[in-house]
Length: 433
Image 1 (cartoon, one colour):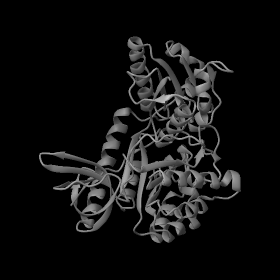
Image 2: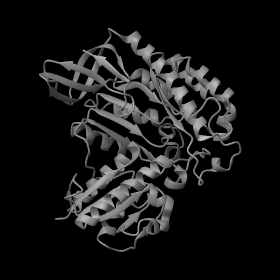
Image 3: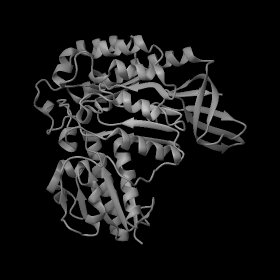
Image 4: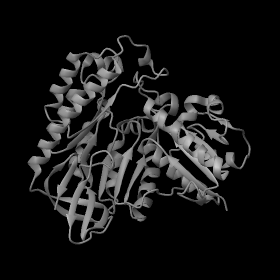
């Protein structure tokens, strides 16, 4: 039996695809390994959304090829980097045994067996649904990818090139997978797509995320249901009402706004009514925790634009803000805009935004000191007769919002929920006891 290992890079959507691939390989008779040195076959599942992701993917491929020199490992590459580079992959990485783009991932085992087709498969799309899935984490949280691709044409983004147009999965299929995940021990379900709030428009002729969430909320074993990647202009009143009505839907939404200056938003081809959307959400759900993403250094951005953005952030709508310097990709329309901002200036602006937002975050947590909150335990390690425990609350998404940190005299069970009292912050981690 051949052993296969998968290196998954990039966003949670890629993680889901890698878990589908693991399940498909296992169903095909492969043994799954997490040790590249012992594997017969390695698959590097890549990301190329921005330059840094592309560089990380290229480095990972080179690292795995170094192992190949020593062990005879067969190396395959899948996902966004082959979709971007196409036939050039064989020029850049001649020692790779094969590669597929985003739209033919499910055929990777057949490619490895050299059945029915050749080396180059570059139909855009994604692995968005599979009857086989092997979770890559022992923590009871899992992502549910509800759609693939994107119909928006943001000028800085190449996702439609890599992934194609928006394609929703049907509600029954998603509920079935969610029930299976819950039956396997998953207690937190995190909905992801390139644009989660456009869910259903392509197959039901109407936004249907509210209907999907209602059905998912009926799965009693799911303690938390979390929403990421909400596109501002498709957040409906019905969707907001669902957050009000269901306790197991976390009062937390990730809404990437990218900027607030209308001139920059226009150049980005992003919605111009962002402020009104955010205000509406906070008016109807004053206690909801919002996270967003912002790009600094977009072509044409001025000091006035940055000052406007800082003034907006200081209104305190967001608890968490991910800040990214503009990544200029020749495949994106924004590369042809005028007045490109120097990288050093974009970096300075990023630092300024991050400093501003940290002060806002700290003040929000300081006001919560003394509050008791549910914490999902994710690790518990004993050191010097003390247990060092990490977990998350409803307002912390995995890997991006920090953790709850606790030191105690007794161990807590990983995967269980406990009550804890907020004491303060350390960086973006929240100290509890």
